[in-house]
Length: 380
Image 1 (cartoon, rainbow, N blue to C red):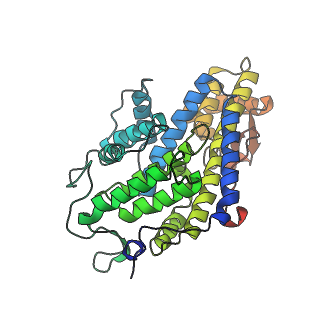
Image 2 (image 1 turned 120 degrees about the vertical axis):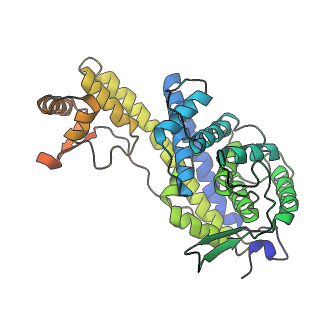
Image 3 (image 1 turned 90 degrees about the horizontal axis):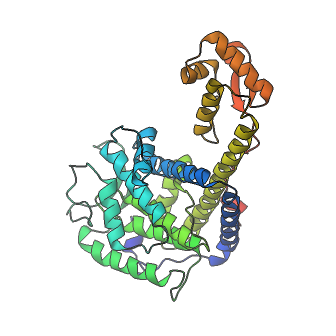
Protein backbone atom coordinates (compact mmCIF):
# COMPACT_ATOMS: atom_id res chain seq x y z
CA UNK A 1 0.00 0.00 0.00
CA UNK A 2 1.42 3.38 -1.03
CA UNK A 3 0.92 6.45 1.15
CA UNK A 4 0.96 10.00 -0.19
CA UNK A 5 4.37 10.80 1.34
CA UNK A 6 5.88 7.79 -0.47
CA UNK A 7 5.05 9.15 -3.91
CA UNK A 8 7.89 10.79 -5.85
CA UNK A 9 5.92 14.04 -6.26
CA UNK A 10 5.52 14.45 -2.48
CA UNK A 11 4.86 16.95 -1.01
CA UNK A 12 3.38 18.66 -4.08
CA UNK A 13 -0.35 18.50 -3.47
CA UNK A 14 -2.65 19.35 -6.37
CA UNK A 15 -6.34 20.20 -6.66
CA UNK A 16 -8.87 21.70 -9.05
CA UNK A 17 -9.17 25.25 -7.79
CA UNK A 18 -12.15 25.96 -10.03
CA UNK A 19 -14.26 23.55 -8.01
CA UNK A 20 -13.53 25.54 -4.85
CA UNK A 21 -14.37 29.00 -6.18
CA UNK A 22 -17.97 28.96 -4.96
CA UNK A 23 -16.99 27.55 -1.57
CA UNK A 24 -14.38 30.27 -1.04
CA UNK A 25 -16.91 32.96 -1.98
CA UNK A 26 -19.55 31.49 0.35
CA UNK A 27 -17.02 31.25 3.18
CA UNK A 28 -16.06 34.93 2.86
CA UNK A 29 -19.72 35.91 2.66
CA UNK A 30 -20.64 33.77 5.66
CA UNK A 31 -17.85 35.25 7.74
CA UNK A 32 -19.20 38.71 7.01
CA UNK A 33 -22.68 37.67 8.16
CA UNK A 34 -21.34 36.21 11.43
CA UNK A 35 -19.18 39.27 12.14
CA UNK A 36 -22.07 41.62 11.29
CA UNK A 37 -24.51 39.75 13.54
CA UNK A 38 -21.99 39.71 16.38
CA UNK A 39 -21.91 43.52 16.38
CA UNK A 40 -25.44 43.49 17.79
CA UNK A 41 -24.23 41.69 20.91
CA UNK A 42 -23.29 43.60 24.04
CA UNK A 43 -19.75 43.34 25.39
CA UNK A 44 -20.94 40.86 28.00
CA UNK A 45 -22.77 38.78 25.43
CA UNK A 46 -19.71 38.69 23.15
CA UNK A 47 -17.63 37.54 26.09
CA UNK A 48 -20.15 34.84 26.92
CA UNK A 49 -20.27 33.73 23.28
CA UNK A 50 -16.48 33.45 23.12
CA UNK A 51 -16.38 31.34 26.27
CA UNK A 52 -19.16 29.10 24.96
CA UNK A 53 -17.49 28.62 21.57
CA UNK A 54 -14.12 27.95 23.18
CA UNK A 55 -15.68 25.38 25.50
CA UNK A 56 -17.33 23.60 22.58
CA UNK A 57 -14.08 23.59 20.60
CA UNK A 58 -12.00 22.26 23.49
CA UNK A 59 -14.46 19.52 24.42
CA UNK A 60 -15.42 18.51 20.89
CA UNK A 61 -11.90 18.36 19.45
CA UNK A 62 -11.03 16.02 22.34
CA UNK A 63 -14.20 14.00 21.80
CA UNK A 64 -13.16 13.39 18.19
CA UNK A 65 -10.18 11.53 19.65
CA UNK A 66 -12.46 9.56 21.97
CA UNK A 67 -11.61 11.59 25.08
CA UNK A 68 -14.59 12.71 27.17
CA UNK A 69 -13.99 15.85 29.23
CA UNK A 70 -16.08 17.56 31.91
CA UNK A 71 -17.72 20.63 30.37
CA UNK A 72 -17.94 22.62 33.60
CA UNK A 73 -14.26 22.01 34.40
CA UNK A 74 -13.15 23.02 30.91
CA UNK A 75 -15.28 26.16 30.97
CA UNK A 76 -14.00 27.09 34.43
CA UNK A 77 -10.39 26.66 33.20
CA UNK A 78 -11.10 28.83 30.17
CA UNK A 79 -12.52 31.60 32.36
CA UNK A 80 -9.44 31.47 34.59
CA UNK A 81 -7.07 31.72 31.61
CA UNK A 82 -9.06 34.71 30.35
CA UNK A 83 -8.67 36.38 33.75
CA UNK A 84 -12.42 36.24 34.41
CA UNK A 85 -12.28 34.04 37.48
CA UNK A 86 -13.96 30.68 37.82
CA UNK A 87 -15.20 28.31 40.46
CA UNK A 88 -12.87 26.43 42.76
CA UNK A 89 -13.09 23.06 41.02
CA UNK A 90 -9.79 21.41 40.10
CA UNK A 91 -9.57 20.58 36.43
CA UNK A 92 -7.84 17.39 35.41
CA UNK A 93 -4.59 17.81 33.44
CA UNK A 94 -6.26 17.01 30.11
CA UNK A 95 -9.05 19.53 30.74
CA UNK A 96 -6.66 22.25 31.89
CA UNK A 97 -4.33 21.63 28.96
CA UNK A 98 -6.90 21.73 26.15
CA UNK A 99 -8.56 24.76 27.77
CA UNK A 100 -5.28 26.70 27.77
CA UNK A 101 -4.52 25.69 24.19
CA UNK A 102 -7.96 26.81 23.02
CA UNK A 103 -7.63 30.18 24.77
CA UNK A 104 -4.23 30.60 23.13
CA UNK A 105 -5.75 29.83 19.73
CA UNK A 106 -8.56 32.36 20.15
CA UNK A 107 -6.53 35.14 21.77
CA UNK A 108 -3.56 34.83 19.39
CA UNK A 109 -5.54 34.07 16.25
CA UNK A 110 -3.90 36.95 14.34
CA UNK A 111 -0.37 36.02 15.40
CA UNK A 112 1.84 34.03 13.01
CA UNK A 113 1.81 30.27 13.34
CA UNK A 114 5.28 29.12 14.40
CA UNK A 115 7.07 25.94 15.35
CA UNK A 116 7.26 27.21 18.93
CA UNK A 117 3.47 27.60 18.93
CA UNK A 118 2.96 23.99 17.85
CA UNK A 119 5.43 22.69 20.43
CA UNK A 120 3.59 24.65 23.15
CA UNK A 121 0.25 23.29 21.97
CA UNK A 122 1.65 19.77 22.05
CA UNK A 123 2.79 20.21 25.64
CA UNK A 124 -0.70 21.43 26.54
CA UNK A 125 -2.70 18.68 24.80
CA UNK A 126 -0.48 16.02 26.37
CA UNK A 127 -0.60 17.68 29.79
CA UNK A 128 -0.30 15.09 32.55
CA UNK A 129 0.73 12.24 30.25
CA UNK A 130 3.55 10.14 31.72
CA UNK A 131 3.51 7.45 29.04
CA UNK A 132 5.02 9.64 26.30
CA UNK A 133 8.71 9.97 25.51
CA UNK A 134 8.44 13.19 23.52
CA UNK A 135 6.24 16.13 24.50
CA UNK A 136 6.71 19.65 23.23
CA UNK A 137 8.97 18.39 20.46
CA UNK A 138 8.78 16.24 17.34
CA UNK A 139 8.69 12.48 17.86
CA UNK A 140 11.94 10.51 17.97
CA UNK A 141 10.81 6.90 18.48
CA UNK A 142 12.07 4.21 16.10
CA UNK A 143 8.86 2.22 15.70
CA UNK A 144 6.46 3.18 12.88
CA UNK A 145 3.92 5.93 13.57
CA UNK A 146 0.66 4.24 12.63
CA UNK A 147 -3.04 4.94 12.97
CA UNK A 148 -4.65 1.60 13.70
CA UNK A 149 -7.94 0.12 14.85
CA UNK A 150 -9.24 -3.33 15.66
CA UNK A 151 -7.94 -6.05 18.01
CA UNK A 152 -4.27 -6.26 18.95
CA UNK A 153 -3.85 -9.62 17.24
CA UNK A 154 -5.23 -8.33 13.92
CA UNK A 155 -4.99 -4.52 13.77
CA UNK A 156 -6.12 -2.57 10.72
CA UNK A 157 -3.59 0.07 9.63
CA UNK A 158 -5.42 3.17 8.40
CA UNK A 159 -2.26 5.18 7.85
CA UNK A 160 1.48 5.05 8.43
CA UNK A 161 3.39 8.34 8.67
CA UNK A 162 7.00 9.06 7.64
CA UNK A 163 9.70 7.70 9.99
CA UNK A 164 10.68 9.90 12.94
CA UNK A 165 14.10 10.49 11.40
CA UNK A 166 12.42 12.37 8.53
CA UNK A 167 10.03 14.51 10.54
CA UNK A 168 12.28 17.57 10.95
CA UNK A 169 12.93 17.72 7.20
CA UNK A 170 9.28 17.18 6.38
CA UNK A 171 8.17 19.92 8.76
CA UNK A 172 10.76 22.32 7.34
CA UNK A 173 9.09 21.94 3.93
CA UNK A 174 5.69 22.45 5.57
CA UNK A 175 6.81 25.71 7.23
CA UNK A 176 8.24 27.01 3.95
CA UNK A 177 4.98 26.32 2.13
CA UNK A 178 2.94 27.87 4.94
CA UNK A 179 4.98 31.07 4.78
CA UNK A 180 4.84 31.33 0.99
CA UNK A 181 1.09 30.63 0.82
CA UNK A 182 0.17 33.17 3.53
CA UNK A 183 -2.12 36.14 2.69
CA UNK A 184 0.88 38.37 2.01
CA UNK A 185 3.11 35.61 0.62
CA UNK A 186 4.34 35.19 -2.95
CA UNK A 187 1.98 32.27 -3.69
CA UNK A 188 -1.10 33.32 -1.70
CA UNK A 189 -3.87 30.76 -1.41
CA UNK A 190 -7.54 31.30 -0.58
CA UNK A 191 -8.26 30.47 3.09
CA UNK A 192 -10.35 27.30 2.71
CA UNK A 193 -7.94 25.64 0.27
CA UNK A 194 -4.94 26.69 2.37
CA UNK A 195 -6.47 25.47 5.64
CA UNK A 196 -7.60 22.17 4.15
CA UNK A 197 -4.25 21.52 2.46
CA UNK A 198 -2.38 22.40 5.67
CA UNK A 199 -4.56 20.02 7.67
CA UNK A 200 -3.99 17.00 5.44
CA UNK A 201 -0.28 17.81 5.06
CA UNK A 202 0.26 18.11 8.82
CA UNK A 203 -1.73 14.93 9.51
CA UNK A 204 0.30 13.11 6.84
CA UNK A 205 3.55 14.00 8.61
CA UNK A 206 2.04 13.28 12.04
CA UNK A 207 5.05 14.92 13.68
CA UNK A 208 4.17 14.39 17.36
CA UNK A 209 4.00 11.28 19.46
CA UNK A 210 0.40 12.20 20.33
CA UNK A 211 -1.99 15.13 19.93
CA UNK A 212 -1.64 15.44 16.15
CA UNK A 213 -5.39 15.50 15.48
CA UNK A 214 -6.15 18.29 17.94
CA UNK A 215 -3.17 20.33 16.78
CA UNK A 216 -3.99 19.75 13.12
CA UNK A 217 -7.52 21.04 13.62
CA UNK A 218 -6.20 24.08 15.50
CA UNK A 219 -3.85 24.80 12.59
CA UNK A 220 -6.73 24.79 10.13
CA UNK A 221 -8.78 27.03 12.47
CA UNK A 222 -5.97 29.58 12.65
CA UNK A 223 -5.44 29.58 8.88
CA UNK A 224 -9.16 30.00 8.17
CA UNK A 225 -9.30 32.94 10.59
CA UNK A 226 -6.24 34.66 9.18
CA UNK A 227 -7.63 34.42 5.65
CA UNK A 228 -10.53 36.73 6.55
CA UNK A 229 -10.51 40.52 6.44
CA UNK A 230 -11.47 40.46 10.14
CA UNK A 231 -9.93 37.35 11.76
CA UNK A 232 -12.59 35.17 13.37
CA UNK A 233 -12.44 31.54 14.51
CA UNK A 234 -14.84 29.34 12.52
CA UNK A 235 -15.37 26.65 15.18
CA UNK A 236 -14.84 23.49 13.14
CA UNK A 237 -14.53 20.89 15.91
CA UNK A 238 -18.24 20.62 16.74
CA UNK A 239 -19.11 20.06 13.10
CA UNK A 240 -16.31 17.56 12.58
CA UNK A 241 -17.44 15.68 15.68
CA UNK A 242 -20.95 15.51 14.26
CA UNK A 243 -19.46 13.97 11.11
CA UNK A 244 -16.66 12.09 12.88
CA UNK A 245 -16.91 8.87 10.89
CA UNK A 246 -17.02 10.73 7.55
CA UNK A 247 -14.16 12.98 8.69
CA UNK A 248 -11.86 10.04 9.39
CA UNK A 249 -12.91 8.36 6.15
CA UNK A 250 -12.11 11.53 4.16
CA UNK A 251 -8.70 11.83 5.81
CA UNK A 252 -7.94 8.17 5.14
CA UNK A 253 -8.79 8.51 1.44
CA UNK A 254 -6.65 11.64 1.16
CA UNK A 255 -3.65 9.86 2.68
CA UNK A 256 -3.31 7.75 -0.47
CA UNK A 257 -2.99 10.45 -3.12
CA UNK A 258 -1.55 13.90 -3.78
CA UNK A 259 -4.63 15.13 -5.68
CA UNK A 260 -6.69 16.39 -2.74
CA UNK A 261 -9.62 17.94 -4.63
CA UNK A 262 -12.15 15.61 -3.03
CA UNK A 263 -10.72 16.20 0.45
CA UNK A 264 -10.80 19.99 0.00
CA UNK A 265 -14.40 19.91 -1.21
CA UNK A 266 -15.42 17.87 1.84
CA UNK A 267 -13.43 20.17 4.14
CA UNK A 268 -14.96 23.27 2.52
CA UNK A 269 -18.50 21.95 3.01
CA UNK A 270 -17.84 21.36 6.70
CA UNK A 271 -16.23 24.79 7.12
CA UNK A 272 -19.39 26.38 5.76
CA UNK A 273 -21.54 24.21 8.01
CA UNK A 274 -19.42 25.25 10.99
CA UNK A 275 -19.97 28.90 10.09
CA UNK A 276 -23.69 28.32 10.15
CA UNK A 277 -23.42 26.77 13.60
CA UNK A 278 -21.52 29.81 14.86
CA UNK A 279 -24.14 32.14 13.36
CA UNK A 280 -26.81 30.06 15.09
CA UNK A 281 -25.04 30.67 18.43
CA UNK A 282 -25.02 34.42 17.78
CA UNK A 283 -28.72 34.45 16.85
CA UNK A 284 -29.50 32.30 19.89
CA UNK A 285 -27.86 34.82 22.23
CA UNK A 286 -29.75 37.68 20.58
CA UNK A 287 -33.02 35.77 21.03
CA UNK A 288 -32.12 35.15 24.66
CA UNK A 289 -31.60 38.88 25.26
CA UNK A 290 -34.91 39.77 23.64
CA UNK A 291 -36.84 37.12 25.58
CA UNK A 292 -35.31 37.91 28.98
CA UNK A 293 -35.82 41.63 28.46
CA UNK A 294 -39.47 41.12 27.54
CA UNK A 295 -40.11 38.95 30.59
CA UNK A 296 -37.92 40.84 33.05
CA UNK A 297 -40.75 42.04 35.33
CA UNK A 298 -42.86 38.87 35.03
CA UNK A 299 -40.48 36.12 36.16
CA UNK A 300 -40.05 34.85 39.67
CA UNK A 301 -36.52 33.79 40.72
CA UNK A 302 -37.20 30.10 40.04
CA UNK A 303 -38.46 30.75 36.53
CA UNK A 304 -35.53 33.03 35.73
CA UNK A 305 -33.06 30.44 37.02
CA UNK A 306 -34.69 27.72 34.92
CA UNK A 307 -34.75 29.80 31.73
CA UNK A 308 -31.10 30.75 32.12
CA UNK A 309 -30.23 27.08 32.67
CA UNK A 310 -32.10 26.11 29.49
CA UNK A 311 -30.20 28.78 27.57
CA UNK A 312 -26.94 27.37 28.95
CA UNK A 313 -27.74 24.12 27.12
CA UNK A 314 -27.21 26.04 23.87
CA UNK A 315 -29.19 26.24 20.63
CA UNK A 316 -29.87 22.51 20.57
CA UNK A 317 -31.30 22.67 24.08
CA UNK A 318 -32.02 19.83 26.48
CA UNK A 319 -32.08 16.48 24.71
CA UNK A 320 -35.76 15.61 24.45
CA UNK A 321 -36.82 18.97 25.89
CA UNK A 322 -37.30 20.25 29.45
CA UNK A 323 -39.39 18.02 31.71
CA UNK A 324 -41.06 18.85 35.01
CA UNK A 325 -38.42 16.68 36.69
CA UNK A 326 -35.67 18.80 35.10
CA UNK A 327 -37.36 21.95 36.40
CA UNK A 328 -37.57 20.55 39.91
CA UNK A 329 -33.86 19.64 39.89
CA UNK A 330 -32.88 23.08 38.63
CA UNK A 331 -35.04 25.09 41.02
CA UNK A 332 -35.71 22.80 43.98
CA UNK A 333 -39.42 23.53 43.63
CA UNK A 334 -42.04 20.98 44.75
CA UNK A 335 -44.40 19.36 42.25
CA UNK A 336 -47.34 21.76 42.63
CA UNK A 337 -45.12 24.84 42.35
CA UNK A 338 -43.39 23.37 39.31
CA UNK A 339 -46.74 22.81 37.60
CA UNK A 340 -47.78 26.45 38.23
CA UNK A 341 -44.42 27.87 37.18
CA UNK A 342 -44.31 25.95 33.90
CA UNK A 343 -47.92 26.81 33.07
CA UNK A 344 -47.11 30.48 33.67
CA UNK A 345 -44.01 30.31 31.43
CA UNK A 346 -46.15 28.86 28.66
CA UNK A 347 -48.77 31.59 29.16
CA UNK A 348 -46.05 34.27 28.99
CA UNK A 349 -44.85 32.86 25.68
CA UNK A 350 -41.46 31.86 27.10
CA UNK A 351 -41.92 28.12 26.58
CA UNK A 352 -43.78 25.89 24.16
CA UNK A 353 -45.43 22.75 25.52
CA UNK A 354 -45.71 19.40 23.73
CA UNK A 355 -47.02 16.00 24.88
CA UNK A 356 -49.18 15.01 27.82
CA UNK A 357 -48.69 13.71 31.35
CA UNK A 358 -45.24 12.13 31.88
CA UNK A 359 -44.36 12.77 28.23
CA UNK A 360 -44.86 16.53 28.54
CA UNK A 361 -41.82 18.49 27.43
CA UNK A 362 -41.08 22.21 27.15
CA UNK A 363 -38.91 24.09 24.68
CA UNK A 364 -37.86 27.71 24.38
CA UNK A 365 -40.22 29.80 22.28
CA UNK A 366 -37.57 31.39 20.07
CA UNK A 367 -37.18 31.64 16.32
CA UNK A 368 -33.50 30.69 16.00
CA UNK A 369 -33.28 27.84 13.49
CA UNK A 370 -30.86 24.90 13.72
CA UNK A 371 -28.02 24.90 11.16
CA UNK A 372 -28.43 22.69 8.12
CA UNK A 373 -25.78 20.26 6.96
CA UNK A 374 -23.67 21.35 3.98
CA UNK A 375 -22.68 18.70 1.48
CA UNK A 376 -20.27 18.78 -1.46
CA UNK A 377 -23.13 19.04 -3.94
CA UNK A 378 -24.23 22.28 -2.27
CA UNK A 379 -20.99 24.08 -3.15
CA UNK A 380 -20.36 22.88 -6.69
